[in-house]
Amino acid sequence: QSIDYELEGGSIETDGVGSLLTTTHCLLDSNRNTGWPQAEVERLLLDSLGLQRVLWISEGALIGDDTDSHIDNLVRFCSADTIAYITCSRREDVHYEPLQRMAEQVKALRQADGTPYQLHAIDLPEAQFDEAGKRLPGSYVNFLILNGSVLVPVFGCLQDAQALNTLQQCFPDKKVVPVPGSNLIRQFGGPHCATMQLPAGVFV
Image 1 (spheres, rainbow, N blue to C red):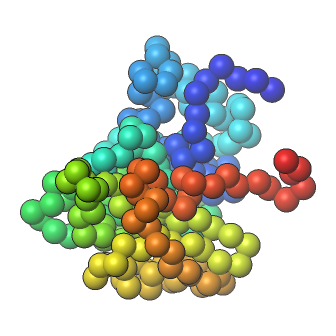
Image 2 (image 1 turned 180 degrees about the vertical axis):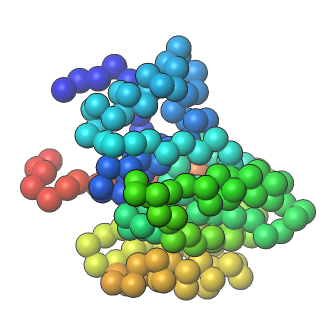
């Protein structure tokens, strides 16, 4: 079925049991879909993807992100009841206040039955810059979930170890594997951005 709506894979995140996470900045941005009210976008997602509900995040953005805040750089489902999200512990960083506001929204999210999610905050890596001095959108939550492992971008800084340890708690039945993230963020992405996931039984 063809649907006249522009949607990138990194702009939506599902838990596999009917809930979808996304950002208002991306899905309602006029760069993509001019004139779509939020209620109509939500109905389109529910009907087209077989969902029960859409969870909207309206705060949080990364400097250098050219996607209008794809959710896969900000907040991710690790399982149906577990969420990992980025935060910033450094008050001098421009991301500190926006990500504090985003954290409050994440903490207010509930599972479909009203139960709070298990939440895991992951600190941003130290600021990453390109050769021209422009800040790049480094994020540990742009990980890629595979059958038996999780590929996590790392940036050669102090926050790497904490991020890997936290994500190993989020995925106790998988092996968390660090992969170099610096080259991918020079193209404004990470492992999740650079790949397409195909369900079992799908042929290319």
